[in-house]
Image (cartoon, rainbow, N blue to C red; front, side, top):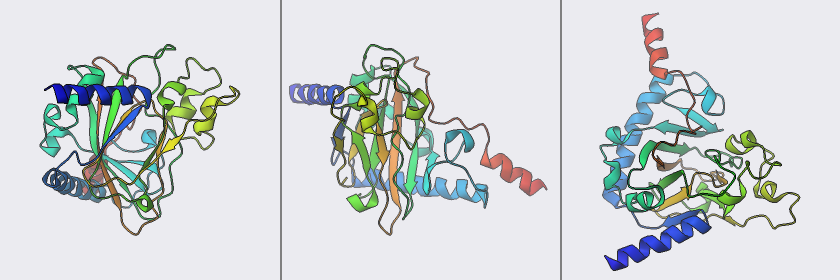
Length: 266
């Protein structure tokens, strides 16, 4: 127990200072295969209902069941119940509970697929700051490599320590919407523009199957381009501090299944 407590403390320190931790080999092959099997079934259901309809970029113009995050990058929500998993029994839960409290709540989960030729995303954070003073995370994301992800497949890139610099309530030069929503002009250098400080270093590494990338929701990050000939699959589970409600992950107000039902009726 002492060893486990020390590991949690070390990871807590890295999450606080760097804004992320990478945990290689956290998930078993059986766990990954289960997530992939469920994900492929759900992807088939949703894309069949969507048919040939085109979707714009961003959560506000997507559907409850599918959003296009950037060209060729698809986000399909899958609940823990649909995965057949209990959030408090997942291998990354102890660190989530340490960061957000034992009463932390599941926000959303699912699968992100990045097709061959998919370009790099614009830099962004996943939710806004709620206080000008720096405070502990109000939300964290766990991203799971469901297979080996070499650099050419486009792993996630992170601006180290940018969860502190991205505080738009403290820095009037930062525009909240240009951080939370993908904006071509946003970069790690944007966060220190005019301050004389160096831009935060960028981190991206090959992710072996079963790796878990856990990061503060306020950190600047992006999915890199998929220059391989295979689709990249990343599972995700996101959590929030109890009663935290500021969230821009999914803003769609329509269902692909309603559209499919109307088409059948017509």
